[in-house]
Image 1 (tube, rainbow, N blue to C red):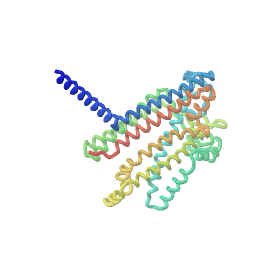
Image 2 (cartoon, rainbow, N blue to C red):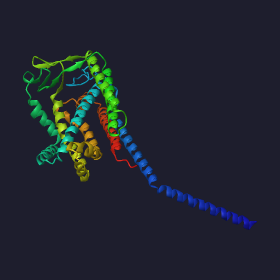
Image 3 (cartoon, rainbow, N blue to C red):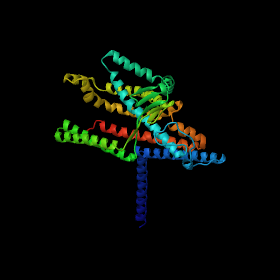
Amino acid sequence: MADFSSRSSATGNASAQSMQRSGRADLTSFLNRDSTRGIVIQGVTLALVLALIAYLGSNAAYNLDRLGMMFGFDFLSSTAGFDISWSLIPYDPSMTYWRVFLVGITNTLVLAFNVILFGTIIGTVVGILRLSSNPLVALLARSYVEVVRNVPLLIQIIFWFTAVFSTLPPPRRGYALGDLFFLNNRGFYFPSPHSDVSFLWFAGAIVVFVGAAWLLYRKARATRFHQTGNRKVVRTGWFIWAVALVLACIIGNGFVEWSIPALDGFNLEGGQYVPVAFGAAFVAMTVYRSAAIAESVRAGMESIDRGQHEAARTIGFSRYQMLRLILIPQAIRAIIPPLANSWLVAVKDSSLAVAIGFPELVSVFMQTSINQTGRAIEIISMVMGFYILVSLIISYLLNQYNARVQYKVM
């Protein structure tokens, strides 16, 4: 019995040791996995970041308490008490700092949107011209890119403001086009609509018509390239869309009154205008950004194999057909990533317009509002949050489009 008991005990000990060795081996194998190391590294990094944020927050709270200052966003409901030179949305000094923030956001987005739109169009044209077979055209396009890209944007903004737009004649001697449009050293004046009907109705109508046009365009492309559907139905749809658009314009015009700018004393009254600061910032930023986009377009076009060019010429495609149907659809895959960066930079570059007094977000909120309220941390964090949010939205949209146009492996 003693021998049997000792053999059983030895067998149990050996089994336990074997299980311990197996457990250690499994643990070692688990820790050696790339996925496990990645999780551990990410967890440590996250903990360090949170610790740094907590330290900075406690340090800021201590300093604010030491200086007798408070932290909070209650100041946004206080009256601003200062005027803003130009705003697309209604504003007067009796409104709050929250309204000032919205005015800054609106002005910034309007400037950035126009720069992105026209900068992309001009940059695409210049990038294509850089590859022209005409040496003079290619040289001019290259000179445009090299000169513009090598001059700092801030200098270009100041140049356009001081040397071009500020030298325009005063309102009484300004340039006029048909007594409707006026250009002088105070800005560009044009007729503006006014209506008692809510803006949401007009915005909703625009969304409906644009959405219908997009669906009809998609249907027309499917009918043309895939030979699916009835072309007569598509033509009927476009006809109905055009008739509905004309009727909507006629009906909408009955609810709209137009304010026409007219000279009154030494200035123009009525209508709407954009200040010369907007014009200078818009032109400088558009020119500068178009040069960067042109290089992205040129690089994307040159990434296409030369055999594609030769094949297009062989089957008789014109230069326009070759660009529209062969080269650009393939080059867009290489153009989108740097184009996304250019759009992001265009939004952030709008802050440089503060140098010429354009009332964008940094000017009206980070400067004037901070000077009056002393809430630097809150205001700077709001401005940073705005730029981060806009950048993330642009990145997401362009990344989604980029994923759609990439080659798919079946």
